Length: 494
Image 1: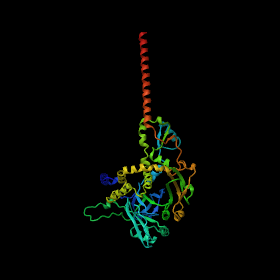
Image 2: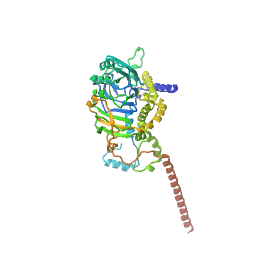
Image 3: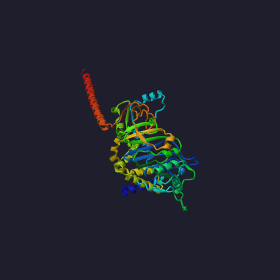
Image 4: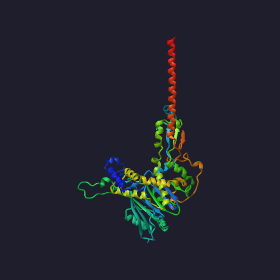
């Protein structure tokens, strides 16, 4: 990033901070809504979604867990076979992944409106609507800190430990939450030489930080008992591993539901061993996935054909069918992981620059969707170049969706491992499972167009047809005038 673009970004961010407080959807920096009360212990809520990428020894997984409970008690402890690179992900990354699998349709309805309304009401439907190498062996009472960094709303520590007891002691001393009952599993990971990523929140209310006249110090912490109810910041982890593995054993120790949806991008279709095959609900080949994230959104025409679409709507269609607002984050995610494989680097240059901007924003207490948009805009050109150079490799991949209630005993006893599996073709359609609905898609009327419409050619054809009709109308008008003149002349001569 140039000095000028960085200054522009920070200047714009400072202006955003001067906006009225009502402009901030989340003034205290938490992604979920924060409330002041005495909530219960941390529990999981909602579908637990995970994105996993694996190719040539490099793996990425992305999570955005849903939790309810006290802010100061929230944290994550995730084991890894090798130290990962860590980055913040857009909060709408999973809706974008879902829209990369099943893009939303742009609908052009050419039916007469009165007839359509009567039909709908008769049908009873109502109103229209940095990589670090593992260290040497540790003593049982020792913890080695590989790396510490701030990533958005989190403080993150990458750790090696000699035992679960040493890990628990270090986390407690440094105000990370170590969930109860995990000692045996953590010791098993330690025996295998794995490391851990510990995560805790680092949020505060901006009003508590702003100094007032006569104030000598500030208290950046939230009031005691502050809690949240919703999804926390999305995070991405990229690491090296000789085989695809998803370490979810520790998730079995969380209270609440264990309904999981895993989006798996690999070379070839897969399933999760020890999980029923019926949980595999979609498998999308890379060529289709590439078309979904780079080509225009599907167009559904009801009650006519493309030649019947009014000219004003034809001119709007290219913008309406732009996929970027719907699945652009998924496109960037896929391309970034493929670029990491090409380059052999766990953390890409523009990802490190984004973390730097996030750290600067945290120092200035600037958080929220506006700041995220400014950061993304500042890095747009670098990210765009990376996407263009890597996306071609997406054609050799397959995205598998696994959706179901994962048995707690299976999660607790082993990491998720995978094997080749091609699901039956009759189930591999949106009619069976639509990724955005997480349910079967209803039958739709009309005709679906997947490719680009030749809008300019249709407009030129419409213009030629209009000129032809105008010419014919002119001829008929002239003939009518001539005939009228002849009748008047005959009457006068008579």
